Structures are given as C-alpha cells and as structure tokens.
Amino acid sequence: MYPSSISTLAKVGISLLLASRVRAQDRTTEQGEAAINDPAVECAIYSYPPVASAVAGGQFPPIWQPVTSVPANDTEGRAKFLAINGSIPAISPKGTMAGDFSNFTPTYSSTDPDCWWTYHQCTTPKLSGLSPDVASVPEPRTLGYGFDDGPNCSHNAFYDYLSARGQSATMFFIGSNVLDWPLEAQRAIADGHEVCAHTWSHRYMTSFTNEGAFGELWYSLKAIKLVTGVTPKCWRPPYGDVDDRIRYIATQLGLETVIWKYDSFDWMVCPSLLPHEILLADTGANTHASQVGTNGVTQATVQANYDALIGNVSAGTFDTVGAIMLTHELNNFTMQAAIDNYPALVKAFDHLVPIAVAQNKTQPYVETNYTMPSFAQYISNHSAASSLKGLNDTSASGSGSGQGAQATGSGAGVSMRLPVRRSVGVLAAFVVVTGAMRWAV
Ligand SMILES: [Zn+2]
Image (tube, protein in one colour):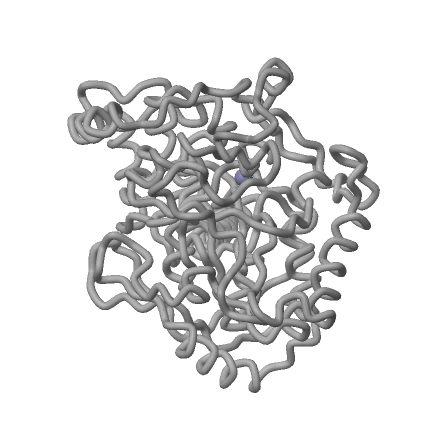
C-alpha cells in the first residue's frame, strides 16, 4: 500500500501543478498574457520569439539605451535618415539627455526662436511648414483620454477595467518597453486602444543629435510595428521636450506631435529615478500611500489636479474645445488614480475618447487595414454600452461591451476582442505589486 499511496499523492501533485501552469502561465499569446491576474506572474520576464530573433539579429539598438546612430546595416533607416538630414533645421541640441538645461538656458533667446516646449510651453512652431502640436481635442466637452509610458507589465487589471466599460484610450508606448513586454503591447491593439510612439529610450529629445533623435523615433516605430503590426502616425515627446528641429524630424517620419494642456503630475508621486537609471521593483509594502514624490507632489496633489480638470468642465472651459491631460500607466499609483477618477471624468465630460477618435482620424496607422471609429460612431456605441452598466463605482468587477478599433484585415497577428467579455479579478492585487517598469517618468 505504501508505494501506491506515494503514487496517488504524486499524481495529485502533478495534476495540481499542471492545472496551475495551464491556468496562469500562458506567456506565448496576447490572449494568454491578458488572462493573467497575478501581477507577479505578469511581470516575470518571458521570451517572445519575434523580438528575440530581431534583437539577436541586431535590428534594434540596445534596449533602454539612448540611440546614438542609425547604423549601415539598417539600410532602410539609414537611407531615410540621409534623405532628410540635409534639410533638418540648424538648431543646436539642448542640455543633457537627463533634462539638465542649466548650461543652455542662460544663452537661449527669450523670444524662444525654436518653439521649445520645455522653455515656455510653445506649441505653435516658429518654423514654417510645421503643424502645431496637438494640445487639445476639437470636440467640445470631450477628454482626449490617454496614458503614457506603457506598456506596463502589470497593466492587466487597469486594461480590464477600461475594457469592462467599453472605454478606449490613446496609449503612448516606449519602444524599449514594447520589446520588453510585447504581449502587453499587443493587448492595447486587441482592446481597441490607439497606440502612439513615445520614443525608444524616453530621454529629453532636444538633447539628441539629428541622427540620435531620428533613431529614437525610428526604432520606437519599428518596435511597435514588429510587435503589433501597425505603424503609428503620432508621438508624444517625453517630458514634452520638443522644439522645431525635433518636430521637423518627427514630421518627416509621418508623426504628429501630441502634447497636453493639463498635467495630473501623477508621474511625480512615486519615487522617480533619472531616465538612465533602472527602477527596481517596489516591495509589496510600498503602496505609495504617504509617498512624497518629486517637487513635493503627493497623492493629494494629483487628486487636486484631477478635480481641477473636472471643475473646469462645469465652468465651461471646454465648451468650445476639448481637453488633453497628461496621465500615465507608469505604475500602480498612476493606474489606480485613473481608475479612481474614471467615474467622475465620465460624469463631468460629455465624452472620453481616444485622441484619434476626437480628431476623426479613422485610419490612425500607416497600414490602412486598421480603422478606428469616427467620433460619431464611438459616442453612439458608447452611449448604448454605458447605459447598460453602472459607472459610479470604481470596482473592476463585471463586464461590458468593448469597442474601439476595428481590424478589417490581417497583419498584426493580434485578434480583436469585440465585444470584450472578461471577468475581472481583484484590483487589490495590482495595488500591492508594482509593475516592473524598467524606470520611472
Ligand atoms: Zn513618458
């Protein structure tokens, strides 16, 4: 009997182990990754063969390192850069990649000849032929809803929350993060979000040489294309750091510069490290409840900024043109703040939509087989969906109708989930475990 008992126990153990693995650790597909509810599992590093082979083949610069060159083996990128290099405005690089401009600003003209956003929030280029930055959305009483710095490996609970409400947004993805977390990037497309580029390494763009700045944009687009199958036509400069030289390079790559007019300062609450540093995962004990971040910004500051935006709606500030506010999927605090404020935003604004939707850009990517709904289509669908569910709670339970981008062809290898019907797990899990973003801000 003894051997038999051992055998039975072993079988039970093996079956439990297999069940656990089957249930929790499909790290090979977008759907499998999206179904993981444990942030610790979500943020365990996995290998995605298309990325692994591209990196091994030297198709990308070192992940998280600032781009310094577009090498000869990248024949397409090199040719594109050389084709535009001669016409790039003769504006000198500014400051350092970490955003130290103390040696530059004393000699910079107070007339702001470069339309440098970091200097005086200039959004209307001085150089002719460049379009103004997108700092607002044209639809009145509408919020162009978006989040920077993803994909965050622990974003499933946040994306579940949005999907359950049929809510799409604009996601500004960092190229290095996309290669680190490709299945999470694919989920954005699958959920109907709009994806824009947020550079390769998230440094201050005006500090780069022409070639470096080109490469920061070029390789972020390449990373997004490799992983999701689409090539964005929009980008957001990290820290808003853009001038007419950088705008020109972006324009030559077909990119519209999207900035913001309101800043939640959510990115300042958690301990921030300089861009070239590595953010070590927080311990579970740190939920940032009493954290005082950069410049003394606290959770209360962020909430006050959300409240001020919401107050501006009733004050009539957006009666003729809508708003864009800077918010992030950077860490658990920023995602939880988004969730906590979502019901109030929905109640205050007439509409929350991705920025492309507010602009009526139904083809947000270079590839024409992907479309997003027009503004009229989006709000029509969303009104029907939102009437079916309570929006006054901040829990992530329940399900709803998803909506957003429509794929009318193939190319990304990402299947669309329309409508979304996903049972959403325990939000507390993602509050406790911080996403392993490889850095802050
Ligand atoms: Zn950013």
